[in-house]
Length: 143
Image (cartoon, rainbow, N blue to C red; front, side):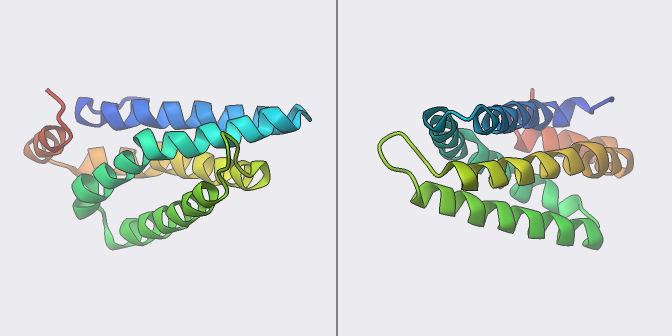
């Protein structure tokens, strides 16, 4: 699927999130408690190190360009995921986190990324004017 150059940074970050969500699911399905707990911990770390900033970039830079309906869906999904990550972070102890919560969160994250990549971003890039896309790229630090 074509992605405007100004949005590719966010799409690459989405790919990282999908990979992490897959790893959480696989670890959970492995039946190895330590592996599932470790994957849950890695998901919590990824939120702190990258995903929270990604959410902030989308909210700060892209949200003003959404339609009212898109904004409602986006806000609801981001609020739900932020709350889930807060719960996951609260469960962290000694390089482990709640694997059940992480598995649920990974599924929600996967669905959210798919919605953004398959619905939201294509709609956004089709209606933004070149100067608006350039402003988005500049705000995201895209050369």
